[in-house]
Amino acid sequence: MNEYEYIYMKKRREFGRHCNFVSEDARILAQVDRNPQCGDMYIEQRIHCAVFHNIPIMSEHSVNTARVKTKTRAMTHTEGGWPKEVDSTEAQDTMKYRKRLEKDPQYVAAVRQLTKQTVTCLEQSTTIDLFEIYFQDEEPDHLPENLTMKTVALFKDPSEEKRSVTKIGWHPEGPTKLVGSYSNLRFQRMSDDIPLASFIWDIAERNTPLMELRVSSPLLCCQYNYKNADFLVGGSYNGLINYYDLRKGPSPVARSSVEVGHWDPVYDVVWLQSKTGTECASVSSDGRLLFWDVRKMSEVHDECTLTDGCKESPKTLGGVALEWMQEAGPTKFLVGSEHGIVLSCTKRPKKQVEVGTWFGAEERGGFGRHFGPVYTVKRNPFHVKFFLTAGDWCAKIWMEELKGPMMQTHYYPAFISAASWSPTRAGVFFLARHDGRLDTWDYFYRMNEVALTQQISDRALTSLAIQAQGRLAAVGDAGGTITLLSLCDGLVEPGPNEKNLIGAMLDREMKREKNLELIKKQSGSRQQEKDAIPDKQADEDIYTERERAFFAELGMNGDELGTSLPGMPPPA
Image (cartoon, rainbow, N blue to C red; front, side, top):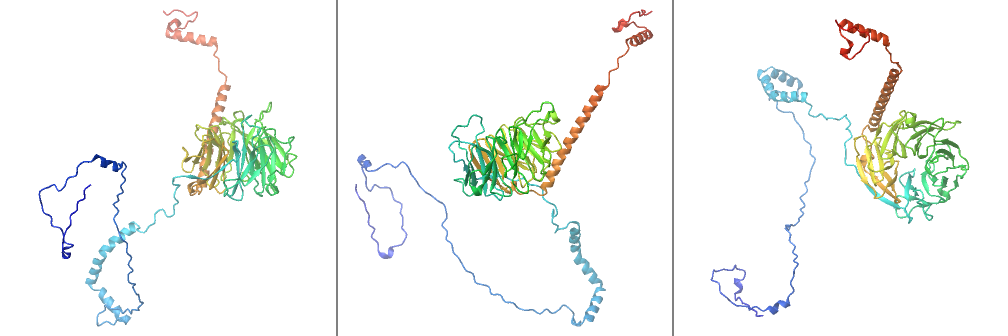
């Protein structure tokens, strides 16, 4: 390949000057023949990558301005503006001058001219307070906001075989630990090698459980003691009650005997408020509510048989949920049954525990029962007369004085397995669904639709527990995973006057239901009175005589009107 070069010969003084271009005709200086073999020396580049930017190049400079020096100086003010013949230091002279000036007509005219503009401004200020702070004393209503909940941690069952999280219990001293009960409730689906242990988890340690609770049969429920957090009580699948003291190890310290315990799985257990802090109650699908003292597990402290209230042939109802709250009364217990009915039990001193009310039972004057087992019964922590139930495909709110539900949610496409009130907000409750979603209802904001729906898991949700401070929620699913959720401030912090407003709303619904029930009773009594009045039967002879007299007066025959009376004379 030929090389071409051209050397410019210039003097040093001519360097740096601009070039002078001249227009000339085109001419051929050299010619390069085509050589295809030269193409083999190169590789075709198909991908071209070029980077461009239009960012202007800027420089940054810092300048320190000169400091301003300040000094404090005193100033003497001397009153001025007075005429020369008036001494401003003499009060009597200045007073005389003011009086003489005020009598001058020009002074009055000047003052009026100066106050024309100010009078208009003063009148406006009198009408409208320019400095008024609007809505200062009024509290703002509950404003809707974007509610959120964030997944903080996942606690997975370390066992190889998948089990459901049947119950979750929070540590009473703060959001530091939680206990999860694991079991498989499908009848005849449990293998011989199914793991039996349940676990205590530490919120800060998510990989491995803090402690393993050993038991001879899988736990369906387990709860911490309110007074002593080292004590736990749990109900097993085989009907036994296990009492744990964590200071002595993961094995139960005491357990109930087969002869006096439950015959079916223990679905729920609660600690009771007592001086010793050792009393608890349990409910099972065998239809019995048992009371225990963990210091003596060999015998039952008290017992109540759950029946439908029929005197001739009572039917036993299996219990699957238990609720007890000190504020509602230490003698009141709510039991959710397998037949969709909620039973109210009363435990009085030195008397037998008895069932007082059957909520939703048509035979006992109720209505609105669930179409499936009532897996959750929870009292409102602010208004304890009202309680929430979850079963079948909806949740319902009841009141102790009414045998039917006051309010209920719409029917979901998936089964509802658990529910819980918010411990910090009176109008918020949560529902766990079998399609893996967690629904949040906020009655303080709206009652006709869900405030927030969150997809928690691909498996069915089986348990739900809200921490006492209301900031954390633990949700268990059918795969053995406990999901820890952090709730936003809108779901934790109560609105202005929320407790009173929710209480007024619940009282309003209660009065409405009572009025409807009263109208129903009155209409029923009227119908009974109407049915009790005998029908008056007319005498046939009197009727015939009156009819004959009527037609005779009109001069008509009874045949003309479709009536045949024997012995009627024909019309003349």
